Image 1: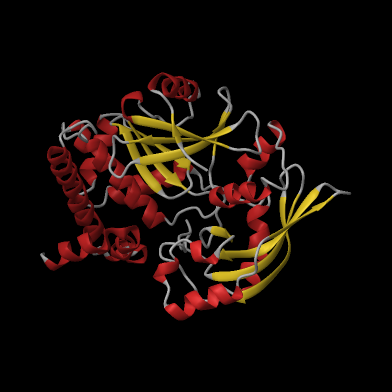
Image 2 (image 1 turned 30 degrees about the vertical axis):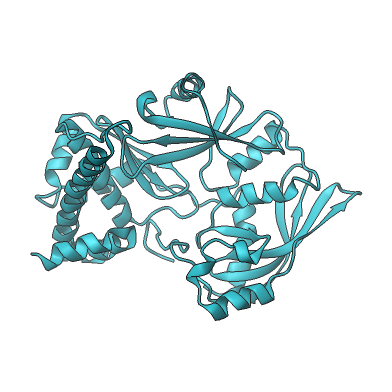
Length: 207
Length: 172
């Protein structure tokens, strides 16, 4: 996926749409860049990224939108499932992995990010691990396979995910309307925390 | 975290009805005001907030953050999947109020079109002012016995301000 920057006039149209919602976050026109990514599984909706450079560090938010409706992504699955129903989503064997990547990029767990590992050598921050851990990941990695269940029209994606400092073998069911469900999961490897991955903070301090 | 918990949580994350309820934003802001009023380094920020009618908004974001796009509106971003600890929230609120204060004082973020050297020096200068002030707030609150459970200095480390707070304390 590649970000494309919107021209100023089009960016202002997006910002005008967003500012019509009194609860929307303020993004000033002078200091905000708007970029978008095409998502092959939606015909009308795109992923929008708004970055305000008036502060340092810059502040960004992402939305799924169709020129009229912009839904902010908040780290939960809810906005994505809502758009899947609205758009509606169109999944194929060719784009189901792109959808999973998009989903896991935008849905977080309390232990940080989830990665679907297509190629262990391209895993984020792999270099931060020692040689033995890198070898363990490569040796334990299960290559990605995609099956299409013609009866239900579901996709069954088997492979390896990273979450919470663990490498997990998983079979993921993706329904034709984009709902995701882990059918089977098995721990392959523990103790591979990546920097800044774990989220430790709770409002009431309990865990 | 146990093996079972990690494996079970994977499915919970995917559900569309499993998010942690967001804490009440009014209560969070009230707690921030209450605690920031207890330090002479942050009380002026609360006074400024009231005098200038600065609106504090709590929004759901992908990652915890603070944002002050305009001096009259500041945002504190917390995550729905793991609503932030009060200490982090209070420091993010202080950070955003400091940003608003600098704006009101005329210390603005230079434009991206500004000459490179000027952009870097002005950005660094503004950032240094803000972080130094944030360190003084965190240190002062941390030293108050009744706030000992908040661990403000530890939180500064977790927020990535470890070098700044260590240098600040070493030079006291």
